[in-house]
View 1 (cartoon, helix red, strand yellow):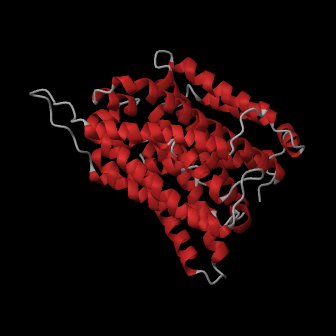
View 2 (view 1 turned 45 degrees about the vertical axis):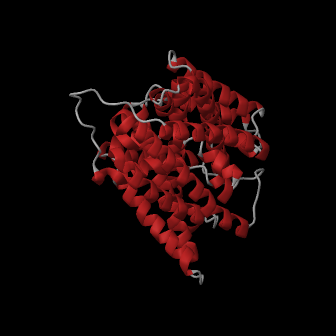
View 3 (view 1 turned 90 degrees about the horizontal axis):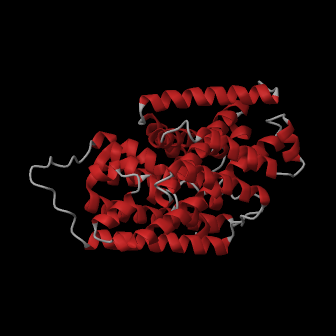
Amino acid sequence: MVLGLGAMIGLGPFLLLAPAAASAGIWLLAGLPLAAVTALCAMYSTSERSSIREHMGRWPGRVAGTGRFVALGCLAVVLARTFAEHVAPDQPDLAAFAVLAVAAAGNASGLLRWGSGLAWLIGGVVLLVLVLVIAACLAVAPPVAPIGAPAAQVGDPRSLMTAAAILFLGFVGFERVTAPADGEPQHGWRTTRRAIPVIAGVVTVLYALLGVALLHQLGPARLALSPAPLRDAVIAADGAVMVPFVEFGAGVGLASCLVLVLVAMRRMVVEAAIEREVATPLATIARAGTTWPIDLVVGGLVVLALPLLDLTGAVHLAACCVLVHYAFANAATRVELIDQQRTWPMRTACFGLGISVMLAMSLPPMTLLTTLVVLVVGSCLGALISHRWR
């Protein structure tokens, strides 16, 4: 649970509530349970360790893999930009490039290792910051709007599914518990199944309390426009003295999540090389057990994407791509369980498939079109590189 929570609470609180409020206003709180249920289905499906490529075929595997890789790349861009906004708002571009370079170099050198002890430390720091922000925002009355100011907009309830799609990203990271890679802590099936609802429940309650606190202090309009909502909320609550502590917690949480995202991208490249899905000099290096060149290449790709993606567009694209990936993951679990007498896991996978598709379809049309183009191009590029079209 510590590993799972440490991978989740550094992402959502600092960068997802503002775009969710921009989509649905105060209705983001109604979208949170929907995001949690979608994440819960994905957690149970991935705990089955079903292979998309094995159960559904090579092309569905490529589409799902492309979606996850692009989603992770977009998340890395968003994390770097949000880190820069909190730590160095005067020079955000330089700070974003710097944190990406440090994270990639640290992964390549092997200096950055994520164990249980570090997860306790980072999770404790971030959790303490969030608790203090929630307490400060709820304990102080919000600023009084000036006479004649327009009434605050509460948002469109029809957009709560869009908010749910965005908030689903706040649960990404659970595969460190449900499907850990080689070298990471491995847990028994029963232990994992018991931990899943606890992790999902704790994260949901934390996000709900934080959402209520930020909406109480900032309102939906100011929250939607804020590049650093936690910092702005404590300032509005007359807690400017807390700003350095909030920025420190944000820096710790966002940087640690950035490291995990880059590690996950490297792992995907290595797995594709082992499965002969790529045939390049980089794949030869990966099959030989050397990973530091892959870390540098992955970091370089994210650096190239940094000036091309704006914050909102990157969040929407990441949400759509990751929902496509987990739709395939749920479908693969469903196919695997057809011949087994396990009714509820199969129904959970079916529901997860359906709700993932619905949430993805609720995102803006341009995001859907971009996702389609990215998935088609990425899948065809994978077939071209691997010389396997069937």
